[in-house]
Image (cartoon, rainbow, N blue to C red):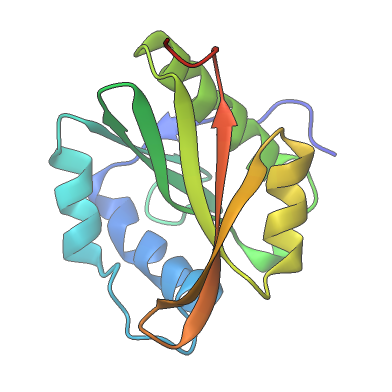
Amino acid sequence: MLTDVAIRLAVRKDANRIGELSRELIEYGLPWRWRPERIRRAMRAPDTNVVVTGPVGSPEGFGIMEYRDDDAHLLLFAVEKGKQRRGIGSALLVWLEEVARAAGAQRIRVEARRGNVAARCFYNEHGYHERTLEKAMYSEAVDGIRLEKWLRPPST
């Protein structure tokens, strides 16, 4: 397990590799929606963070988090296969959670494929709770699980 993971904001040169990782690790078997141009748009969006680990142009892991009112939404998150289970994902997630807290988010939402047991376990280990199962959530073909983590108690 890595103890010191350098996390930085993504730059334009990272977009191609982020897109490749998304296609390979997240969007496999589905239409490719997170192409480099969409990732670059996310980088420019004032309410979104795109963070990475690894060298410029060749990130090993990444996370894309969008902030809306009291909620943050983890849109995309992955670590290169050969780099998994070394603490990179945990470091990225903790960084994104700290930013969400600082931004005033009450909770973080994320989705995973129903069959992606590793991702579901990862999020559960980090305090995320499975809220709902959604049939045919991805491209009307693949079931998904909606998860959330409360950062502070719900407003009354």
